[in-house]
Each structure stands twice: as C-alpha cells, then as structure tokens.
Length: 309
Image (cartoon, rainbow, N blue to C red; front, side, top):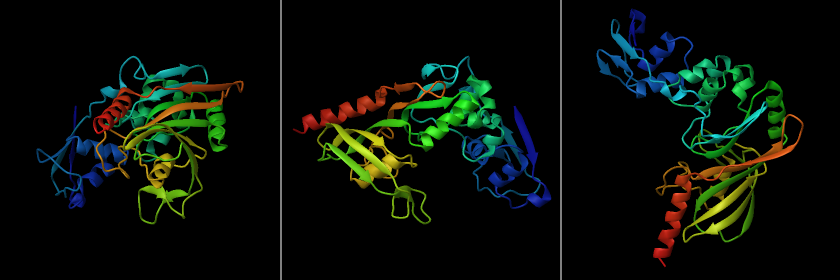
C-alpha cells in the first residue's frame, strides 16, 4: 500500500522528516525516522535522507512499513515466566525497545504497534489488548534496549499503582548479572556515587551534579581480563549499573558509552526480581537464566584466558 503526498508551495525548502511529521497526523517522530531509514520514503522516485530539502511540486511516496513483528497468535510466546490476573512476568530479549521514543504513544497506545521498529509496548497491545485500560500499557519499569532478562508488567490499574509505588519506595529487589572488563580485586564492592547527565551531554555517568545512587557489586567468577559479576542496585537511577561499573574501572562489555572492545551486545542481564505481589501482598521472586549469547561470550573469554596461560 502506498501513500502519495505533494509538496505545496509553502513546503519549499522543508526537510523531508519535518514535512512528513507535519503531514502524517498522529505519528511519532521516531516513526517518521524509521520510515526514512527503512527506505520507505521516496522523493522523485528515489530513496531520500531525512535532511533532504524538498521543492514545491515534488512527489513524496510512502510505502507502508512491514509490521509483522506485532502479529501472530501470541507475540510474547516463549518469553512468559509467569502470568496471573494481576501481573505478567517476561524474559525480555536483548535488542527490544521498551516503547517508542516520545510521548505520543501514551495518549494513543495504538501508535506503539504502528512503529516500524519492534517495541514491547506494541507487542503488549497486540498480545494483551485489555492492557489499553492500564496506565502505560502496564509498563511500570524499564530495561535498556540492550539488556535482557526479567521484567514485570501490571495487568490492572490497581496492580500498576501498587508496583509503581513499590519501585519508588525501593521495595523491589533487583539482581543483575554482567560481564565486565578487567579483574576486580575485591569480592564485594559498594559503589556510592551520584549519577546523571553532565551539562550538554547525553551520556549518563557519575557526576557530582547527579542524583544519589548506590550499587552493590559481587564478583561471581574472574577471568584473566574480565569478570562475571552480580549487581544489586539499591536505588533506581537510569543507567545506574553501567555508570557505577564504569566508575569502578570495570565497564560492562559491549557498553556503547564506556567499552571500546568488541562484544556481541551490552552484556547486562536482569537475573531476578523480588517484590510483594500486588494482589494479597505475598512475597514473590522471579529469575531468568542468562541467554545463550551471554553464556557463550563468557565461555569464550574464559577459554581465551586459559590459552593465554
């Protein structure tokens, strides 16, 4: 299916991405960006870049993005650790976005399923359409796109409120596994350092201008120039574990902000979550075994260490 737009006289000189954002009501900026990156927007018969300046009278053709990622009987099949009337616990794969960028999807949840890039919000809407009645489609906490592992989703407004409050009160115990660079000397380390963004910087790091944060780091196994560690964040700052491990001199392997050596992806895995069930208050704990790429990478590092003597 194709949509055709014509550039009016007052559109002369507009960038392609801006023109599409103005002429595709209800879509997010990230959706427009994905259209262009995927070669689905053509100007004068040719694929064009986002900064392409348009001329009055030009024809812009849009092909509908393939959205098979959100179709199927149950797109969450294989990820479900536990499900009941109040919560859905998933083993999120690495590489999956939590939700589209921007806030448009919060007001119109269907936009999440229209994104060209797969995202958890869109999958939840497709698999559990009743979540439309729950704030943020039940998403009460986040994992980085590159992070795999345990994630809890609220299935009712009451569960959403209870879990959100539990995360804010730090009443949720979170355990992560990470493969880090270097060889930590201490078996257990507690990092207490504020994290945040420095002025005009996008990267989150340790900075005196950040918010207080604490992480307990325990070494599970050491290699020659790497280690397998367990991280227990005591606070819930964005990118806290990554920033604290880098600050300690042992960045997570594959971290795009702190690690330069090759790795298959960000080697950070949400291993466990423990909290009071929002219905009844019973203490529950859910774990997810590290995925194959994580295990294989650690095995290769250990094998390389043995070969090196």
